[in-house]
Length: 142
Ligand SMILES: [Zn+2]
Ligand SMILES: [Zn+2]
Image 1: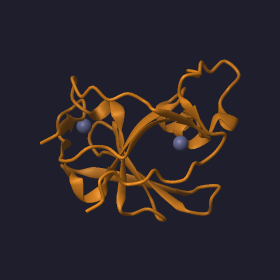
Image 2: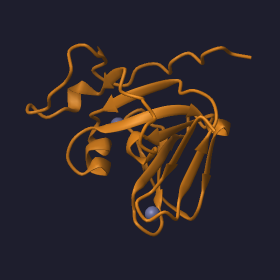
Image 3: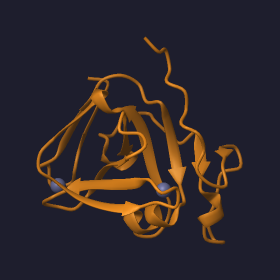
Image 4: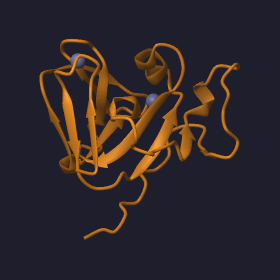
């Protein structure tokens, strides 16, 4: 496995092969709600590369884009695990904090800065998007 992860109660585990398509910090309103305050931190993987085991609970909402977003969390402890868009079911947007320590990943881009509160500290070194950017190209397509 390239990356592994687990929720805080241990009932959900992740086994991920392959490298991420991108790592992003997101300030959209829904992410602030999911994160309970600030931005969310997300690692985009090909869906088939990220195997999630254990019982999940789901919530869905319609995004500003009109796409349906599904937020998957541990059914037992409620930790956010990953999200998925109806427009991009070939991707899983894994929450960075659920990956095991030592993954070495960090945000490359910050998105939805239009929705960030005025106290947000946004690293000027990161690629920045006011709203939703295009999906990053898949590295080394087969
Ligand atoms: Zn977001
Ligand atoms: Zn859990």
